[in-house]
Image (cartoon, rainbow over all chains, first blue to last red; front, side):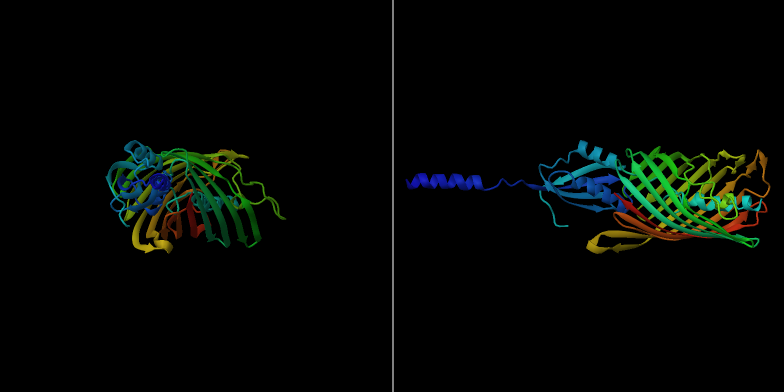
Length: 102
Length: 288
């Protein structure tokens, strides 16, 4: 009986714990952004992607840093089309396993 | 005749008021796909000569919409109050002026990290949305004091922008050809403009949002053919003007505020008695 209760308890606690997705940092190199207007419009578009938690821009370097869940759609094709619509040029991206503090 | 002569400087006010970025004219920087930019400018200008004094208050509302990242549509609506003071009294009008509608297409784009070079031709039409038959107690107002021209006028040009995060240069060439109303045709005009914006300060606004402060210097040259009445040139009309316009611009993430003063430094108006003195502009642009 105790064993059955323990088993049921473990099953319920297992179901109750929400599945946690991993976070990752994506550094996106974008050419053509020259002013705060430019970075704001790009950040706004990235923030609309499901799973994106924060977006910051280094205008001088032309790098946008995105902290997002690893399920966020940040592949090259998506990014190229996103920045094309904004009037800029997607160059490349690098991904890291964790989100760093800004 | 005297009131026909003042047309040149009035069109100088109107032509400059209808332009968008940098401060007094256009830019080749993009309006993103499905994005809207709204720009408002208040412009005050004066002209004088031969015992006459002209003043104009104009509120210009311009909107830009990105059909895609290369093609944008713009509309410009001016609302103006004009007043001409002569020895015989005052003549004035107020209301909606002639609207402009035009399209701009990015033909060439070369991007790098924090920099861009673009060339964008544009073309459009000035619509006779302003009244050209206003009257007062004396009678019909002179053409230069009317709210609108009464004609459809076509214009086209090309703008180049070379920008990085520290400075920006915009340069534009444009041409306008004017229609005919009641035998009168305002002379065609050719404009060459350039603007240099230098970032002089970084500011952290509320919430840490960055903003760039720019010192701006713009210069322009206007070449206008003589007006015609029933096909005959009006001698004291048309001419050339060169102007300078220093200003300041604060560019934040979602808005840009700007101010400038435009003054003619060279004026050759074929003997026209009244000449533009100055023009001040205060403006705000918001990105949606």
